[in-house]
Length: 355
Image (spheres, rainbow, N blue to C red):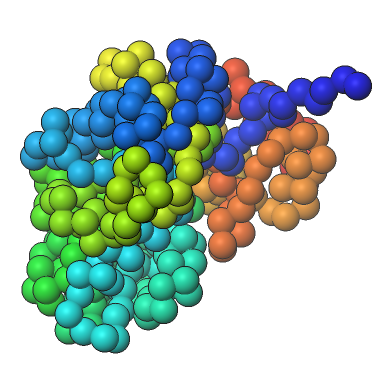
């Protein structure tokens, strides 16, 4: 029986995943059956995970990359859930709340449901960013965690991270930055978002997005070991006697692929990819505006434009894998596989189908 081929990325315009780097793909295949959930048994993959965390910590300006706390997760959702769980476990009140902007990823709604904490979301400003005063008004002594977004999934916006960290500090809460998508682009911008820019306690960054590692490969980093210690449970039947991860057994593919991608691309390859993606996003935004569409100007390589529903549906009928924001705009994420020639082909089809 003939095996099906994986879907091509050629017309995928709204995904935050991309083709893995060839070295990352090969490394993932080699370590597919190694289990980083028991590093005392699978020592090689344990060593590689230490290298992966150090690489991600370097990228995010952690104060001590060589000894940073963290691990390779199944993705941003797991990392965000774990950040909430850690903050909840370290908090001093029985009733626990998390305060976040409305742009926060839906994984925080999952976390609130799973962990029985209250999620308080606050409105954004006119540029789709968190408003520190509104966050401060929603936070109180029950607040275990304040969340800032560094690369929002709908508009690619970066919240005022230093100001939000001050809000968290004022109420005795931990501060988490969700840079799942933006984290591999932000080092090559002037945005404040990292451990060096603010009192960040935990941070999410996903190698399987712009980092060009294989799926699944997320990342959770912490400023202090105590953040992961708060997650640990005993694992008496394993060689490794304690485990802080949310999942137990994990494939080493994500770990090995992350190390291979970082080795191949940090920093120059990522810098080139980020600059090319931002240039493509600006080019596309200008082209859409020239055609009369209302466009949300890109901050990071993500473009949103008010394309009418019939036009949007015709583009999908032509095979373009596109999605919409909650407000209904066409949403294009300029990932590494989204080249200028792909965008030209997309605009050609847009011109053919627009009403």
